[in-house]
Length: 376
Image 1: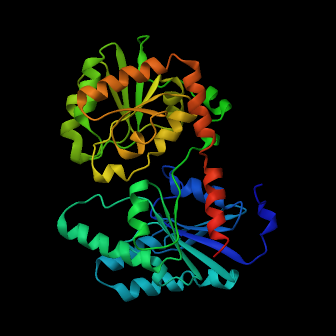
Image 2: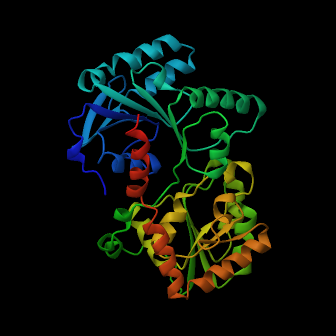
Image 3: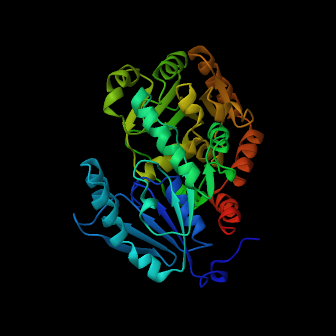
C-alpha cells in the first residue's frame, strides 16, 4: 500500500536533490522521480536555472516540492575559476534555511562533478547514478572515475539506472539498488492525447510512421537510421529532437531522404501527437559500453502507448526481447523495423507493451526508492 504524504508530513525529514536540469525545462528522470517521491517526503530540488543573476530564489511549485534557482550556476562558475572555497561558502550560506526548517536531511546527488553534498549540511547521502562518462578521452575519463568513486564511497545508498552501472557500483558500495527509468501516465493521459493537434510537419501521405523522439547527438547511430529509411521507402520516418552541432553533417544525409522528417525539438503537445499516432518507436543508439549503460526513458513511453519498438542491440533493449526487436548491424536494424511493424498490427502485442509500462511507472519507482530511503 502506498504511504500517504500526510503520514510523514511532520516527521522533520526532507530530501534535497541536486541536478543541473531546470525544473521547468525538458522533463526527465529527475523531475518525474522527485514528483513521485514528494508523496513520501518533502523535496527541495536544486536546479541549474536562475530568475536573476546573483539572486537565489525559492519557488513552492507544490505543497511538497520547493525548487531553488540561482544556487548551482554561481557555484559552477566559481569552481571553473578555481575558487573552490568561495563556491563552497556560497552553497553553505544559501542552504542554511534547510537545516533550520528540517531536522533530518537526505541529500541525493545525481552527478559527480560539482558534488554539492560536500558543503550542504545533510544527515544521509544517496547517489542517483544515472549515466556513464560520455567523454572517453583518457584524462577526462580518469577524472570522472575518480570523482565517481568518491561519491560511491561516501554514499549510504546508491541507485543506478542500468545493469552495467549496477555491476560497477556494487564493487564500491554494499547498498546499491537498481532503479530503472519509467513512464509517466499523466503525460499521456487520454484527454491530453485527444487534445493534441496534428503538427504542420506531419506527413500528408497515408503511410505507416516510425518515430524517434529524443536528442540527436553522438549517441545516435546514423548508419542504421539511414539504411532503415532507405530499405523502407513506403514508411515515413520522423526523427524529432534537437540536433547537436557535432552531428549536423551526419544528419544532413538522413534529412535529405524523401521519406524522412526531422522537425527538430518539438513541443510537448506535438510529441504526444507523434507518439500516439506513430506505428512503431525507434531507439537507434550506437552500440558500445556507454549506450549499454543507458536505460532509455523513451522505451517506457513507447510501451505505454502500445507502440512496438525497433532498436539497436544495446544491453537494456537486448535484455527485453518481448519489448524491443533489436539489430546489431544496419541490415539487422532494418529487419527489426520490419518485425516491429508486423507487431504493430497485432492488438495482443500492444496489450503486452501497455502491461509492461503499467508495471514501470514513476509511482512504482518512487515506492521502490522510498523503501531504501526511509531506512536511512
